[in-house]
Every structure is written in C-alpha cells, then in structure tokens.
Image 1 (cartoon, rainbow, N blue to C red):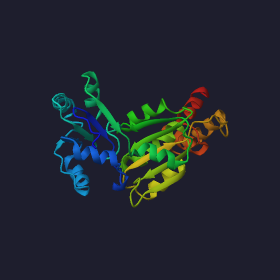
Image 2: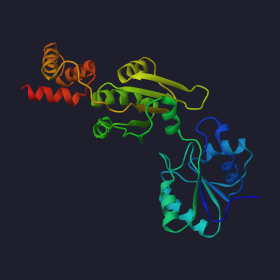
Image 3: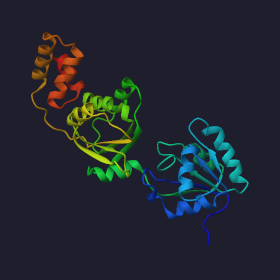
Image 4: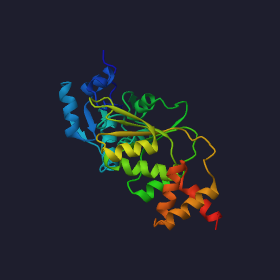
Length: 279
C-alpha cells in the first residue's frame, strides 16, 4: 500500500556517490510522484534510469529557484505530488531547495523530508574528530580576501567545523586557514562513498604540503578540530625579532609574518599584533 500523499512536496536525499545508498522510501516516492524537480535533469536521468524510474522531470536550480518555486507550489496546490532532488545529498543543504520549502510552508502546503546521504555528516563521523558539537559551513567564498574575512570570525570556536571545497581551491583554502588560524589538526575527505574515497589526516601545514605536491581531485570535505587555547612557543618579542630578521633578508613584511606564523603554529594576526606592540 502506498504511503505517498497527494499535494505533498517530498524532499529526497539522493546518493553522494554509491547508488546503493538510496533508501527504499526515496525510490517509492520517485516512482509514484507526478513530477520530480531536479537540480540537473541530465544528471538525475542517470539515477532514474538505473532504478528504471520514468517519472517526468523538471529543472529546479539556483538560477531559476524563485520563479520555479512559485510554479511548483501552484502544482502542489492542484493536488500533484512532487519529489525534490539535488545532484547528490540533501536538497537545501548547499544545494537548491530552501526557496520552494519556505514557500510551501508559508502557503500551508505539506512538506516531508526523506532522510538519506549527506556528505558533511558522513565526513564528520569518518574523520574521528569530536562531534558532540560541530558547525557546518558549506562552501567558503571563492575569493581569498572574502574567504579570510569569513574565517577570522570562526578561528576560536570550540567545536569541529566542516567545509565543502572545490579541488582547484583546496590549496588556497588550506593556506588561508593556516594564515588566519595557525596550524591545527584537520582532516580532508575526498570522493566520499566512491571507488577512490580517501581520508587525509594530519595538521594543516602537513596537509597543505601534501596537496601542493599532488593536486587534489574530486569532491572534498575539509574538517577542522576544535580550537584549544595553547601557550604558543616563543613569544611576541621573539616573533617580532624573527619578522625583522626576515625583512632584513629581503622578505616583504607580510611574507615574513606569514613564515613566523607557520613556524610557530599561530595565526598571522597574532604575529602582526606582536610587531605593532614592539614598535
């Protein structure tokens, strides 16, 4: 007997890599829905073909979210059942979905969420980092200046933090993390649930060196251990002296401070403050 109700928006989590991770409930809804709203219809056709599902598709992505959400809600009010999926994982979490969900709720249209795969939570458990409290960020800004500004606000949070990142930006992001946060225990997880899934554990400095030597590929989660107050090696006077020595050797002030921060596993901001106080 079907449990799928007419006039309901079903938010369906889909596999992040391994197709075997799809749930039986999601398959039931995808088969019985009147329409599937998909982030990329070409990508989703491969999933539906694998499970021999022929339900009609319509596109719902970041570039048409607002207008398409209104269309979907009209159809839901007319009694159609709609399944919402993204390319992978849970719609609305770093993927399109929130706009139509919010509109449904404001219009008193029933919404149900079918749990399933999520890259951030899967990576968190796999990382082995503390998970009693954690913060999920999704993707950081694409420009270095905006990325560093955002990271400054998260530097001293006492819980594990989770980021998504594109492979071509991973090296820059790790470098920015070291510059703003100093060295810290971290985990980089690539290609979750796929054939070439890999987990890279270590401190930020060692992970940066690893990915500078070998360019990363695939979808990536970066997880940072909670901030812990630790007495830094050396001290402000020593940091200032080493910055001055670096400048004498021909380094630009910013580069000299960056090297001192990396050496002592502290933030560049701490080194900068030490140089100001020493003047």
